[in-house]
Length: 154
Image (cartoon, rainbow, N blue to C red):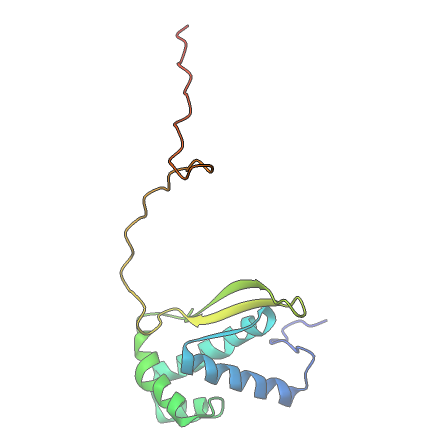
């Protein structure tokens, strides 16, 4: 039984799995969104949240620990200087997994992993949309209102 065993195996050796997630975390922090399979996305969320937590600590020791996972200095600098300050008021939950559907070639379930507070994203809420009116399919004109029955008193 797998009681208390964290992480997923994904049919890879430990070294291959570690390399895979190091590359995915680096790509996620560089581009702030990455497309991958559902199983990898769920595990990537754990790795990325840990890196952002280290970035929020901001110490030299945290920077060196993050450098063992993040392979590019430019991405490491971006994590500590740009990304971590964005999540200062948030206690966890830095990433979001959005399911996309099925991949055509092998029917694998795909997802997008993205940072919750992305750079350049709107912070304000959009105005609520007006309800769309039904259109008559044949003419492209608004459809006539359906007749409503009168309530019979009685």
